[in-house]
Length: 346
Image 1 (cartoon, rainbow, N blue to C red):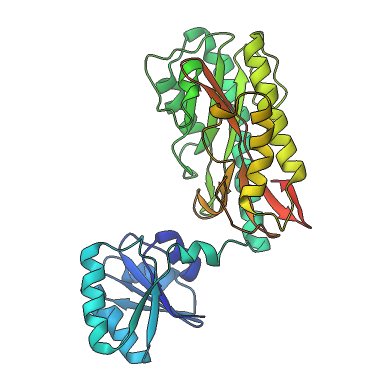
Image 2: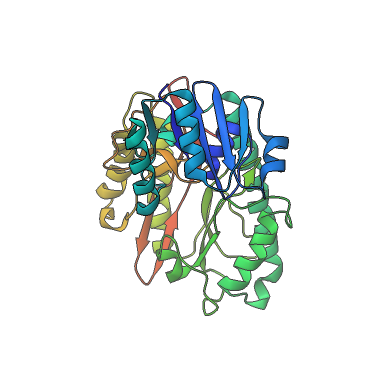
């Protein structure tokens, strides 16, 4: 394994069992060096795993160079997406004097952890289980307050409390609560002007973190006194029903036909072809899925351009959608793990 250094907090955690917002981790074979400032040194020494040496520093770059010099490294890899131009120039000018080559490898750490261990899969599964419970609790809350005509902003505020279990869990991302036309924006921001009423169509996308591992799920529901976020929905509006059934068929077909050995674009094509043959291809405006783990968006990519080769133990979302501008949107999403060559819903 080539020596490398990283700044990303999730990568720090993966390597050392601890992270903070001001650190560099260097990995050389099985040894990690956690370089941080005095604010975090005590916690780092307490929580980092036994393979990690904690270095307290007022000058991270000099400490990084010290590790490189001490070990006589001739090459060290890094993720260019993590470094500012100023930091890169300072490091590379110093390394030139030490005759050590700085090797740019974009997003290499996500590639290292693209296949999940059984422990990681179990953590993601637990996260998704808690997420599904929160979806059920949110449906009950909506039914209770529907007569009060809550706005998207009110719903957004309330669902964050439900998802986090009033502060017990962090969220994977800001939840998306889209009513009618606002649901036609895939990443809609909550509006105080969008009011929830009976027979509206509601798009809800949310996830939580369990022991730092993310979950992610989207459901689209008809708003009624018995609202639920199950996949079986009965819309009074015929167009709502038609679009929903197209998206549901595309999602379920993609999950059933996904196989290890396919590329990300092969899997994307299953969903995209189904929607395109229905005549709504131009309204499917994003990729079919993304990897899920310590980051909410990681490898593999399930998109029309993705050459990522799908393997067992990869975890990713399947989330086709159709978005009719100024009318409504439908998206249905589950997280799957590849086992024995097939996709299983977590």
